[in-house]
Image (cartoon, rainbow, N blue to C red; front, side, top):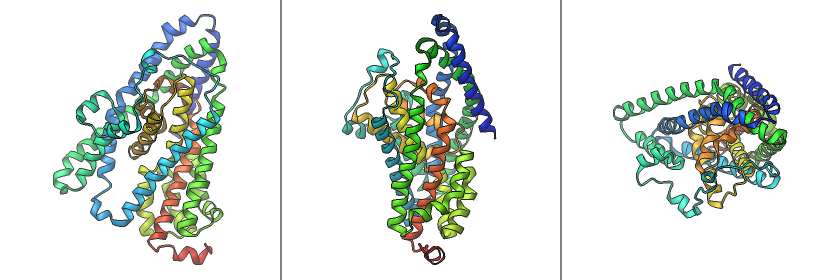
Length: 409
């Protein structure tokens, strides 16, 4: 409910900004000199929290996975499934944005700094993931290096005795909680930031700036549907011999709940009940796979990030190289581990993707007003993905005998 109220306020801020921007079309200097600075302040606050938020969240997220040896087959299969499907999702998002070109026809100039962002090759992108100086990566805000270093620290904690690693993990857990609170505060002022950012844009470019947003919504929804049909139902059919129709019918209660609440964690009880009662997954599998999925499986969010990143690149007239596309896929995939539990998670994680390839964060204002609509689809896909993973893991572990008898899968 609180999230709904905040979304409504952001939408009101967007509409108010559009109206004021239309009035100021004859005097764009007023918008640029007296209103835009407040929007710049909002963007600076977002930039301020990115590195500490992601770093602390990923350290805790990786550490919470547990001892890799004790995870065994089930943990390994689950992690691989979630990461692979997330990579597929963001790839689908990029592909759809390339095909539909939602940002075509609208060019907003950016500064020379943004246009001159270095575009490394794929090999250099992969090599630069591991920082030679992790502290420099943190200071420079190199997102992929921040993610890699945080994952190494978190995984390193899992192989130490608890009495040794607990103080370290507790520190970053506290830091993560503090950053969540700061993020919540920043999101509370988001309506004003959105207002201050959209006014100068509309005053300069008019309502043409809003037309491509319908294409963004279309691309995200098409992508979510394709990902669910192609990726999830294919995996369930191949590994569990369950028809797509029976799979989607069984998980429908959780998908609808996720669509309306936009919360994977809040939908978790419904997801667990659906996979147990409707799809026959054992308690052993569902109790491990689904909570982990609510934490690290963000396929819908990753797909949304791919669409939005390419949309903003098109809007700002920036051509992304293959290396930058790879960076988007890696950032969205690895960053998904630290997404859960962050208020305004979709927009915050989008800032990581944009920053990783040098796209202007000011473009967030174009997405913020429609974020709730996009969030409904991506959250629903996240939950469906959790369920598909539970079924696949249960099938490979011989835990689907009951469902084969009850629904004739």
